[in-house]
Amino acid sequence: MTEFSSLDDIIRPLKALTILGSTGSIGVSTLDVVGRHPDQYRIHALVAGQNIDLLSEQVQRFRPKVVVTATDEGRASLIKRLGDSNLPRHQWPEFGCGSQARVEVATDPEVDFVMSAIVGVAGLEATYEAIRCGKRIGLANKEVLVASGRLVIAAARQSGTELIPVDSEHNGAHQCLRAGKRTEVARLILTASGGPFRETSVDRLAAVTPAEALNHPTWKMGRRITIDSATLMNKGFEVIEACWLFDFSADEVDVVIHPQSSVHAMVEYTDGSVIAQISATDMRMPIQYALTYPEREAAPVPRLDWNQARSWTFSPPDLEKFPALRLAYQAQRDGGSATCTLNAADEVAVDAFLKQQISFPAISAVVEETLARVPSRQPQSIGEVLEIDERSRGVARQVVREKADALQPERSQLSVRA
Image (cartoon, rainbow, N blue to C red):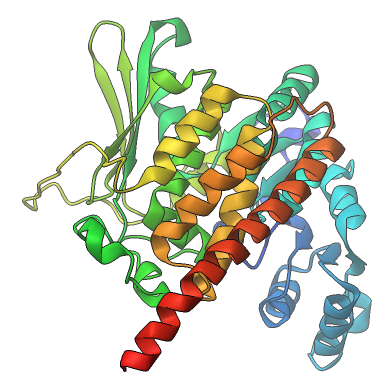
């Protein structure tokens, strides 16, 4: 006969989750993991932006207690869709919208775990406040640390919470670092696929289209992060994030191009040993790792077949061809609000490229010019970070207009010749 030491051994409470960015790729993958373990997890809140159709489906399946949309219009649209569904009204969630509602569902006393997966600074305040409340965080939002790493890490240390990285590279580094003491580590190596233009000549880059840049060879991601992967800015953000997560200097983090995307991160120890984290390119593995850490459970991801012949290659990045990575390193070395400006300018520049207002190489040029025009300072609050972010965006938009205007004569000449 089995003996139980307490009631908790018989009935284990479900871990309550708030997902910031439930309709994005990370949010969808998180819900896939959660849906496979209904005996372990329940959804307290779903937070989403504009994809109301998918959000409605998620509400009907996972029955969250609260749903937060970005706008009142989104909330009204969701209510209408639920009204047209078969979900009984007494099973509907509470509804909220906007930044304050995001903070409330991230800091609710019922919540055990917050998945921070909103792209951009929209998820910064809610994630920061959840950290201050001591919630365990699955960190999939680069902007949280890129824009305000010093404040976020200070808050995490004060509350004693854990930030478990979900990005495949940082999650891999987190696993590798378990092999030894932090004082025994010489350096961290992050891998990059190289994006769709790894083999493209520098001369050809000025003519690449948004469709070509969005055709990532390995990962299926959102539009901005896919373009950032093409410029290698995304890898630059990961360098900054790694510095804050694992207490590295920029000089202790290297990037190597690894097109096969099987090795996600490597840690070199002081004795010369290198520990690598290797897995299939499936985000459900790092998501589940974050949910179950420090334990491991079987994950619904493909296994590498070691009976198949394979080859992996590694090469250094070309910083002249991809200056965005160089700019990210420099911003981290400069410190202060430089990385906040870096992120803000990049988001504006990527949007301009997708709208075909500027060329692909101009993305990095806009970022570099914005960094030169916006003085760096040490923000003392999240509110100040958001102010710097907004000012940097304004400067970046002006730079985009200048570069777009400069292109007009060239475009007019091309039209005449045609």
